[in-house]
Image 1 (spheres, helix red, strand yellow):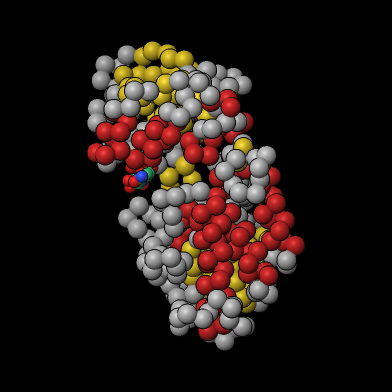
Image 2 (image 1 turned 120 degrees about the horizontal axis):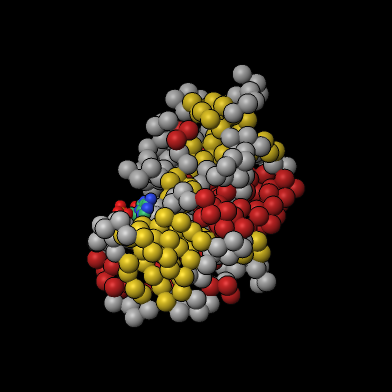
Length: 334
Ligand code: NAP
């Protein structure tokens, strides 16, 4: 086993880079495994598929998701963060130092670990859907991120899904759309009754029950959908100006192999309110991998900051460096 790292951060979204900035500035010399490009994911995470970010403070003109992640990364590297462009395939958390094994390179040992591997939006899996989502062609998995963009103004927008996310996205989009179509594959929503009622009673929303999307139409921009009635098998085409897929997210936790306590939904448990500690001492979690609720770049960055400060504090408590100033009000986490 090669040299022991003080802090290894796994991930490359806002949570990971913010953790790296804080840790690097605290002289922890963090090592980041930023992942590697695959068919469905890129280093940088979900923001790599977001065209315009207009709700992150400090960017009054807006910024593209990829540029934002590049700037986050540059800032982390400027303070001494080391970056390896590889996915981590395995961790061993039952020993200390922990072992972190990347896809190709040698395993490393780590005194502390921040898991910030994010979550990925679930997609319908239709060919044109993915292409238009990546090209900014009016297909998105996040209404809060993209809904306010000019291309969606006064258009008929479709939301696919029947859970709370779909309800929330549909209600949010009513601010901009001429009409919102909620397309659901069954004849009742999974969403909580209060959310479902708001959607069902909204004058701008129409629900297409028992309907599934067979095809996303459009070349440069989505223009329509080919739909199937799940009861009768009948198909038809509708015109739309935007498609929002809200069929859930999958947190990227498979590589943990059950060594950290998860919620039944697969998100990492951080049992103490306003903390990033996990069920494993010395392992912290930040960003969408532990947050199924807010899922915003700004909240991910906030928890990344928290995780770095907690890791720093934990390391100091275990004899590795000085404790940050924040350790005043209560005893350090053990
Ligand atoms: P979810 O509850 O799992 O709902 C996913 C929805 O997508 C379901 O209606 C499901 O249909 C549909 N779906 C899944 N795969 C599909 C496919 N391949 N094709 C078509 N439809 C498909 O996910 P979520 O809405 O993201 O919510 C996740 C969790 O976060 C939930 O616990 C939710 O309560 C919570 N949440 C809460 C709030 C809030 O309280 N404000 C907001 C957002 C999320 P079926 O119903 O037929 O399975």
